[in-house]
Length: 288
Image (cartoon, rainbow, N blue to C red):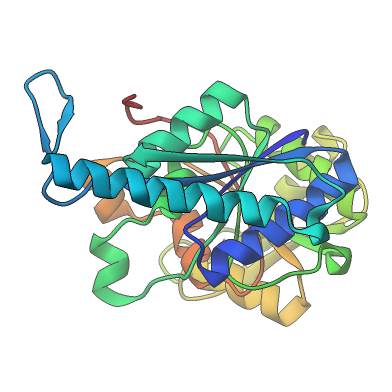
């Protein structure tokens, strides 16, 4: 984890994300790319070639906003409390998700750390946040945080497993964080009223997956809940897990809306850091 990207909107949650990333970078001798994207003004229009056109007064206003953002980023990066890690700053104008995705690809980011405020009700169904998009489409691990978290307190990671998925890449990432935090792993399968598997057989499958991937210091569990996402969250609360880890699939359009995403649901409601890794990242076009 030598290159950690932290998108920021200067909110409290974004500050928590930077604090988390800083602690990880200090442990891994990594550096941080702190990035803010100024979204296109509402009155901006696009030409046939896809170029942004704005009123000259708007353009001047945007340049002033970018100048202030750069100053704010540099002020954060130069704070003495971050003196153990190099923090590079980037201020851009554009589509936040597309610019962040381009930054991940261009800088070969090893990890993205983002703050999230969560969501509920209709907002959660119809308004996809940038954090949710990163969870679905990022080509590297993503950690989301909603509050300040001391990484020295991470001593257990609950890992949601679906035996039908290919686990190689996600478990390799989990092993890195397990080693970094010196944590134990709890591998879980969630039985729900609509999808019940034989508990003994599922424990055997989880045990087999763990042994296949050379996991150490782990336990396997079958947990009952109404829905998979509530099962993961309730398990983490009941067993005092410090972090949640899970794979997700990149989905778009109606497939995502009706099928939902376990990882995104957990990210929206978790009180602890959530590590996600997309098994099928499908990055949206990153316009320059």
